[in-house]
Length: 150
Image (cartoon, rainbow, N blue to C red; front, side, top):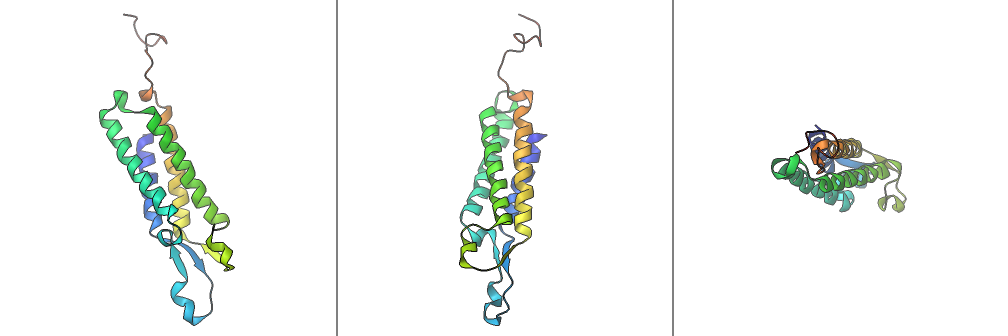
């Protein structure tokens, strides 16, 4: 279950990259064309995090099909860490857009930031749920009283 929640979060974050992240309230007719910026245009780090998520999603799916007990614990914890970073990245754009905000423009967050935040939260939470599932443990069940001792 946790892996699928993480995959949904990665998908939402990736979709959010291509939507508007920031907009300005400019009255000047000459600058009407540049009123909004997608996450892809705002900062190269935003699509990088999405592409990293796609790579982690592919690795999670591969681990689910091939790994011992359907999970690789280190991979799920790595995915959780990157999900937390994606959440913080989107949150930073809600609070004050890094870099672009220094130009003195009044910037407002748009739908892409909110979708990125939701995606990052789902990504981190799903990876955390997946990491805590017993499938990833390599301990001997007999040692911990969960099965017959051979």
